[in-house]
Amino acid sequence: MIAPDWLRSGAAWFLRVGVLAGALYVGWLVQGWRLGAALATLKGEVATANADAANARADQAVRVLEAERKAHDGMQAIEDRLTKERDAAKNEKDAFIAGVRSGAIRLSIPVVGPVRAGASDADAAATGGPGNEARAELTPAAAEFLDAIADEGDDAIRQANAVIDAYEAARKALNVQAAKSK
Image (cartoon, rainbow, N blue to C red; front, side, top):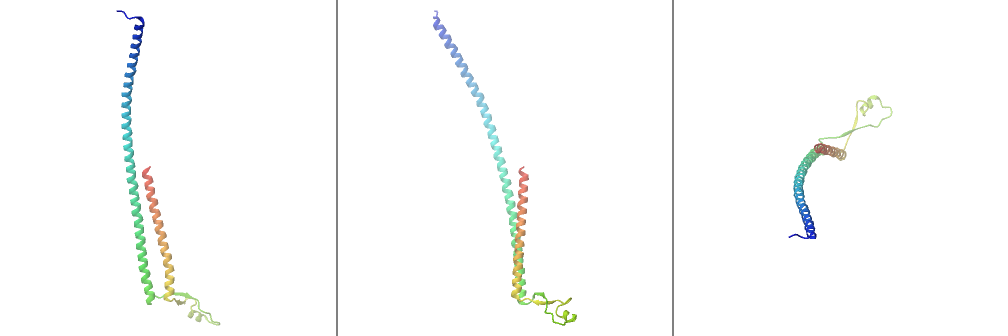
């Protein structure tokens, strides 16, 4: 039995289309497998890179926290030293003021005495002239007032020195941290 020409030509055409469709399907499957393998490899590399980045961030966070802890400890040490210096100065001031009030410590300042008409060099020496200085004793209240002024100045200097020390400690900590991260 011989098939008509139109059937043979149609069957050949279907056969050709079928083979072409089969080839495309096989090509599509092979390409899918190849790209699937490449995608799996890429996903693995991305996961590894993400894990490495997470570890690097964790290490950096640990370094920053360590630097913060060291800076905090340094600031605390500076604050403790300032407190000890203030306490020692207060104790010293209290002892000084107690001595002034009790009369054990007397404060005086040099003064220029009145010059009398016709006074000789011997009289000048007796009234506080060259080599023999006249002095006036301060009252305990005046001594306390002057000591309070001096104490305020001393405390301001202590505070300024603590600020300078804190600045230097922070600057050193930041420089060390910047050098490590480069």
